Image (cartoon, rainbow, N blue to C red):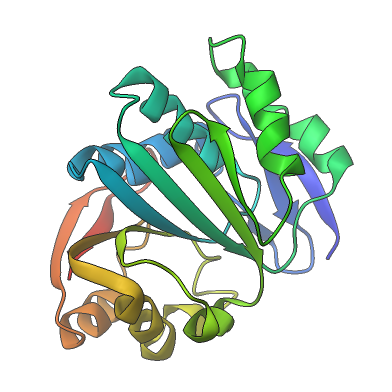
Length: 223
C-alpha cells in the first residue's frame, strides 16, 4: 500500500492511502480524534484496577500513545494490558516522520514512542510501569483464533465502511463481542445506523455521543 504523510487541522500528522483515498485519522485532527473517542469516551469511563484493552487496529500507534499519556497522568498503580492487531505495520521512516512524541510535553515520550514501535510483535512488552503492550500482526478476522483475557475496553478504529465495509458488519463485531467481559465497553468514531443495529442485535446497550471535531456523533456500546 502506498502511503503518504499529511498534516491534519490540529497540527498532528496522519497517513493517507492513495489507492483507497483514505486517511488513518480524521483530517480535522488526528490527536483530537484519538483523545476524544478513545480516552474521553473510552479509558476514562473504565475504573477497574486492571484494564484489558483490545485495539483494532494499531496503525500509526497514536491510540497507544494517548493511552499511555492518560495512564501516566492518573493512577500509575492501575495496570493496563493493551492488545493491538495490525496486518500492515508502518515502516521506520513513517514512524520517524510522524514524530507523534512531539505532541506531548513529557520529555520521555520520544523514548516511549520508539519503544512502542520497536517492540517485538507477538510478545508482551512493558512500555512504562504497569502498561503492557502486545502487538499482534494479523488480519482482524483472525481474532477468533487469538487467545486473550476478557477484554474490558475495545478501541474499534478500523478504516471506514466506505473502503472496508466488511469490517463494520456482524461477523467481526460478533468475534469482538466474544472476547469482551460482561459490562465491557466498545468505543468507535463511527455513528452509522447499521453499526448501532448490529451491536444491539448482539446484546449491546448502545449510546450515541457527541463526536470529535468535524463529526457530529460517535458510538459507545456496553456489552
